[in-house]
Length: 145
Image 1 (cartoon, rainbow, N blue to C red):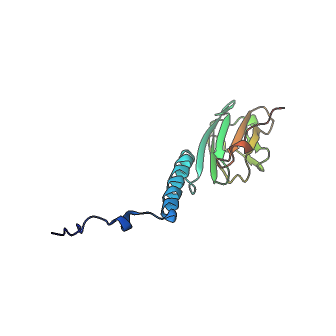
Image 2 (cartoon, rainbow, N blue to C red; image 1 turned 30 degrees about the vertical axis):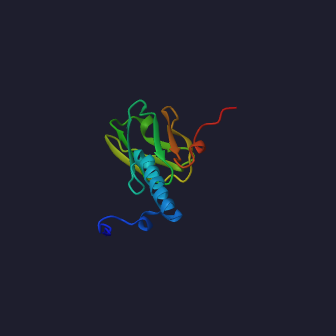
Image 3 (cartoon, rainbow, N blue to C red; image 1 turned 90 degrees about the horizontal axis):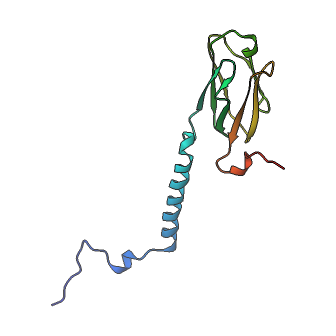
């Protein structure tokens, strides 16, 4: 008596894989891993929102964002101090007045990685904007000689 193969089982020919199928599976795994690595920065399309208080100092003094993604730095200035009136970020072409007793949104898209000095118009308040490039981590580390 000859037994017929079960219709639900795959034959040996159908279970063998080609090289391109393996490459597709590996490519999908790599894509998922890279996507997960970028998740802390909130995905590719959404703005990076950072809240900064301006009251005698910048808090936080260091703001980290990612290159190539829209950024929204929200400065809260709860006073009318002359020193906190202007914000300047060297190297990112930012120079703007901050509203007293309110929030000023500074929106831009950083085009290069690096450390950029952030200060008031009188240069008494100091901080920095660190623009990171997750695809080229060495691009934003400070170099010490």
